[in-house]
Image (cartoon, rainbow, N blue to C red; front, side, top):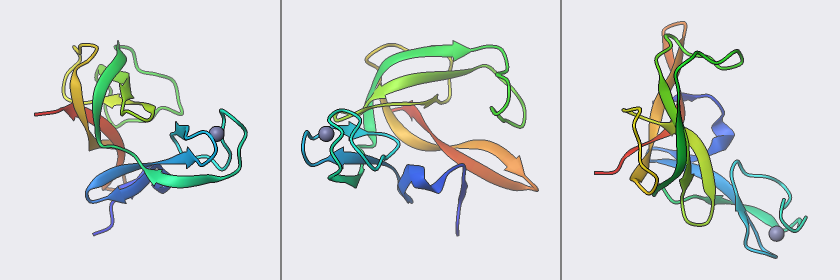
Length: 131
Ligand SMILES: [Zn+2]
């Protein structure tokens, strides 16, 4: 089964879900989404790398008003977004399942429903409370 996702280049795997970043051979900087050059040292020896799937909330906020397009959703409900410290890189993403978070809280990567297109669910990534 092929999942429909907002941007396939964000993922190195969908089952299990793993984000794809890039790592610089010269300075070891990791970035997400993956880039063809290093934003830290301008190095060009950059390779795709799967990112850790667990981390901690570095900072967060809850959005209680519907954002303007291109934000897209089937039905708006307040949602949280945050920066997640995955170790080699801090990633921005949805925080799933609740709207009250703590800095330092443990989370893990998950697929999240973004919207529905002609009955087909389109997924993006998010982070949920780690059990
Ligand atoms: Zn670099």
